[in-house]
Length: 402
Ligand code: GLV
Ligand code: MN
Ligand code: MN
Image (cartoon, rainbow, N blue to C red; front, side, top):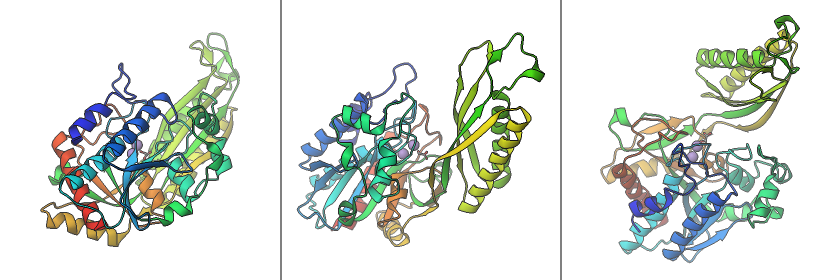
């Protein structure tokens, strides 16, 4: 199948007809359809598909199972995510193998296509959960008990989907069989378009943390409770949102409250609690720590001023990632030799490649996003650019696996 045909088949899976955004959450029926799509096409290419102990899928091409060159990405999405984030890397991996097979290439080293689970952390709150479990960056017992908004734990969701949560944990055997991982991803941001470049290569990933802020107050009547008598958690929450923006802007960081739950949720009542999630990223670990500390302290001051309690818990933290320079230079060299000038770009977006980078040489290819919008139904990439991405990935795999 060509990239366009693969893409057309994948497009409806998990797409909400109302918003046009994707709601492809881990271990749901949409996720199962995505896994089935991947397995079907990998097997049609003659690859052998195996789940690992952490719920990721691996499709192997080639006799040997050591020194393998891995590529792939994820199919899970943020709420109402775009079609390309993750999915582009998976479809491109399948299409690149097809392209290499069609030209008669047979890999000396195995090539293996990875489908990672729960990259976004949209259901169980820890991003890159599949790769974190694999590398030992998250404790398996903690992971098993992570629960989403519906109260269902990862262990329960995996079991309901027919997967076994008992074996979750570090997978040194699998990691030891991989020589390198190259993840192709849609660009998230708009750096390539002004450079008139179609393909970019990643330099590194900003450090990134997610924290949950729980503001606790007292429910009351919106029409009768005097302001002076209220303990309204919405007010310190609102101050914290504004403070986060100011702190981040002043420190060259990014801070976002993208999710908030007010309880009990009556339009005519003061809330009893506001639970909100801060996503904060910065160019370095120190600037991230400074930004978070300042936001936390603004939240604590605002909570105290309104007689509201505050509890802050860290849900995930990913340190600065620098991708392997030797691998990056080799990739830019291979692309340059084929006439593609691929700029090297930093990014603030998290990826499984960033987690695997702690253990094996890792690199990323970015495909131009004309608007730069991502984590949104408005995310875009032109078909011709996606096809150029497939060709670039095929060149890289051919070079690394020969
Ligand atoms: C994942 O896309 C992230 O950067 O949060
Ligand atoms: Mn994403
Ligand atoms: Mn992604």
